[in-house]
Length: 179
Image (tube, rainbow, N blue to C red; front, side, top):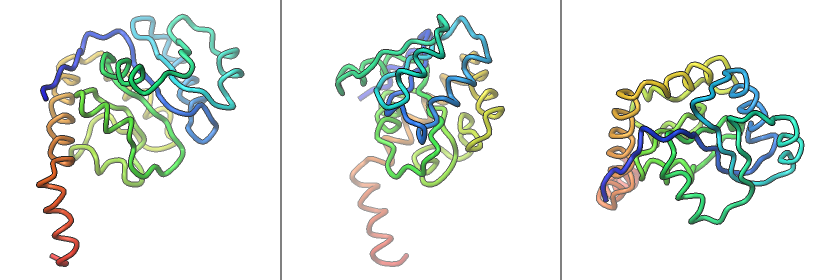
C-alpha cells in the first residue's frame, strides 16, 4: 500500500480508553493550555473519566466523539494530522499506533517501555513520559509541515519493515539461534 498521509488535516486524535492510567486528563490539560484554535483534538473512546472530562473541557478545539467502531476509528485516524497519547502505562504492542503508522500518520507518544521499538531511531515526536512541558513542545511541532511529511515517510517505511513477514522471520531466527 502507499502512504496517503494528509499533512493539511485540521485535527489530531486520541483513540482509546478514557481512564486515569491513559493520561487523557493530562493530555487535555496540556492541549487546553496551548490555546491552538487551528487544530482540533478529537477524543475517541469511552471510560470512567469521559463524563467529567467532557464537562471540564468545553473548548471549541476539543471534540469528544464517544465510542466508535474499529472501522470508524481507523477512518478518523487515517485522516488526522497526528495521533497523540499520554499514557501512563507500559504498553506492550500499541495497536492504534501501529495502525496509524500504516497510514503514515505521525504519532506523539511518551517514550517508555517498548513503544519506541516501533519507531525510527531518534524519533522527533516522542516525549519524556510524565513531562507535559515536553509534550507541549511536541504538539508545537505539528505546525512544521516539512517535518510532518518527513516523519510520515519515516514512520510508514519503518512500520512496513517491522511488520514485513521476512523481517519478522529474520528477527525471530536471530533470537532462536542466539545471534
